[in-house]
Amino acid sequence: MSDDLDPTTPPLDVTAPGPSLRGRLAAADLRVFEFAAGSHWPGAERILPKLSRAANHGVLWFAVGGALALSGSPKARRAAVRGIASLAVASATINTLGKRSVRRKRPVLDPVPLVRRLKRQPFTTSFPSGHSASAAAFATGVALESRGLGAAVAPLAFSVAASRVYTGAHFPGDVLAGAALGVGAAFAVRGLVPTRDQMPSPGRPLVEDVPALPGGEGLVMVVNTRAGTPDKVRALRDALPRAEFVECAGGDLVAELEKAAPRARALGISGGDGSVNTAAQVAIAHGLPLAVLPGGTLNHFAYDVGIEDAGDLVRALEGGDAVAVDVGRFTSERTSGIFLNTFSLGAYPELVHERERWSSRIGGRLADVVAALQVLRREHPLEVELHGRKRPLWLLFAGNCTYRRMGLTAGRRADLADGVLDVRTVDGGRLPGVRLLAAALSGPLSHSPFHSATRMTRLRVGGIKPGTPLAYDGEVGECGRELTVDKQHEALRVYRPLTIL
Image (cartoon, rainbow, N blue to C red; front, top):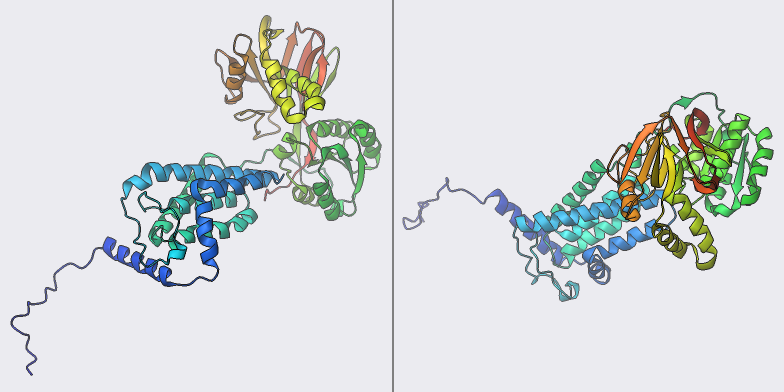
């Protein structure tokens, strides 16, 4: 037989182009999909389709986020909020850009066993996978706040992404693209709202005249038993076996702190912002550094200084790491005191007063609502003399150091020793709710027809009706006719870790 080519066979065109890169990728994607469809994953047939359905519309991730938020851990709450925010950004991007940019058809289900298929097949385009984007966004957002929680959520997120291929809803390439978009969304959110470890250290300057307390030796920790943080206190006891712990109810707090101070090298307090305020007064009077374990509802001061749990405090105490912070002061004929966070006249003290009046009757949650309605329906704002002229005000607020954007509650501070008061006023007039909300959402320095904000070192207020309620660090008192608010710069030394984990 001749080796010559059959003259009827067309010659091979070596210059003809091969499949495009896109075609080769699509072919590889199809082969991987068919391999996955033909593979048997033990136990997956009962779990993955259900897991895929549970992740519809982000329901699974909202449930996980809710569980984290209800855990009581500040780190877990931050992780939940960041995870949900990342999911929202990823979902919005998928629905507005992703699905409309690439019109890819869903896989043909012939290779997929019937038992694996979803009961309701998706009808949108296949690229990219929205479920995978949401899973990756949530898991990455959680991990950016807490590596431990992120590691716990990651297997669930991976399983959701894998389920989209396993059930025949997506090609593997759709899943990979969706996951990449989800990770990008989480980092985009971090670019807008930094994580805790990216935040500047709020406690400056560092001080060197506080003792390191290995094992807690020399620490007397007074525990307000009404604060309800037994787990944190127990963890601190285990980590600091040489420390002395004194338990007391809220009414005995001042006496116990005064008794503890003479035998302490450092004075500790476990409680909310009101308890910390009381302990700070005793610590300043006795020249002692303060150790704070958050145990209240909001714990603004402890969180701003960098203490969220027992581990943070243990690292600071054993390392002898502390910072100097400013202390706000207020003085009037009827009362005087200090504040580490905020001082206010007007709507907020009235809100606290009304909440206390109603909480014993209807419970705390409903009392908050009733108190807000009672305060906002009042037609007569506070009348004061400010900067030499009389003004009607719904609220006068003074923050110890500058707060960033406030939100609906007091926000965070980047510096606890900046030497200034963050003073904000909400003018009287109609629609107090609108005015207060506008002030709450304003930045550190702002001025509008409703409210103004400025920084100063001293504030004088006159013409106040005697008995007008005032609030400081969550506590309530009564004001006299004249009021002075000023600062003690770097007056308090507080333990805080040099690094935030």
